[in-house]
Length: 240
Image 1 (cartoon, rainbow, N blue to C red):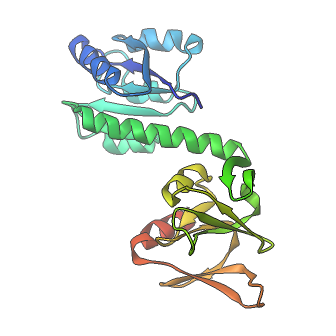
Image 2 (cartoon, one colour; image 1 turned 90 degrees about the vertical axis):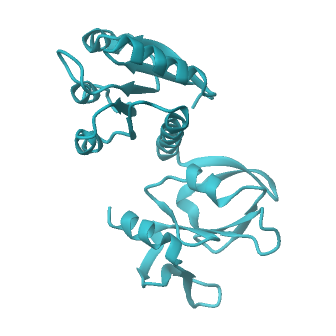
């Protein structure tokens, strides 16, 4: 993914469109490729436009933002509207975010951060590995070989990868938050302050622990703590 994200803006109110463009230009790593005051014109040019995501108004003449979003061919999008009542419809369409006007720069930044994360996750899900720094130099971390990842007990800035065969590798100077963004969301979930697990290796879980389907080197079950802070997200993820 390029460090500069290309954005399309669509809003039938000229002043609102100019204001939104001005806000986007104040945010790092965002390039407004084109701004459309006519949604039909945007649709006519859609196949010839190169962009990463779109920010759409909803209430527009001839064709509304919900209809436009259906034509975006898996491009992520944000709705920016003065109306509350479309929120359910927006998220049914898998909108990345829903911002109410008047738009504030801080709120727009939050929405664009979600876009960045979503685009990165899409890339990661298309790939099967990522290159990272380790105690042995540059390594290719193969996602399907990971059992779980834990914070090092020697140096908290480092993270220990435990592979399916129980071999280990230390990743240097990386946070679990960073790893959560890098690892494919469909396969990995954080269960406590110190650990991320591969959901494909969950054998069973209780209210306070998760048991993996691989035995330890001592031939015992591997039981990891499921903390209260991460429990709700964990349950949501395994229920998908």
